[in-house]
Length: 165
Image (cartoon, rainbow, N blue to C red; front, side):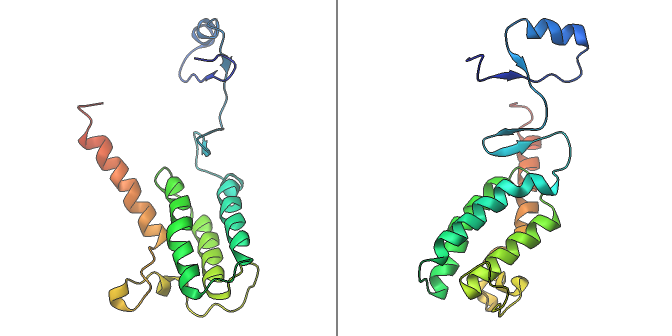
């Protein structure tokens, strides 16, 4: 392990125990910190801690705005690229309603107007866009339900494989 790139995080230790571990030459880390792009903290995420996710999504949308994409092309970009970006976050955290509203708003504005900065041109509410194809919708997933199902899957995997941990 590289001591310059690593930090030691301790929990539930008294000062003497933490000091003896620090003798190995690692710096003492503090919460919150980022790991693989995700903020790791001991509490619920604040609105400001979602900004890296919002920045990545808005950068991608702004890049695509310069291209002349059809509705189907914009739908494909949202369903493949944006959903895969969000997948990493929602499989690790239970995101807030604030986060979902902002992401849904950006997706809806891009889908219908081709630009997230245009606040008009949205023809259908996001919950209608998330209808399955069998019910007349384009088949996009509902972010909130998807987030809950991925978190439940994580809990299921933790408890069903508890003997192998």
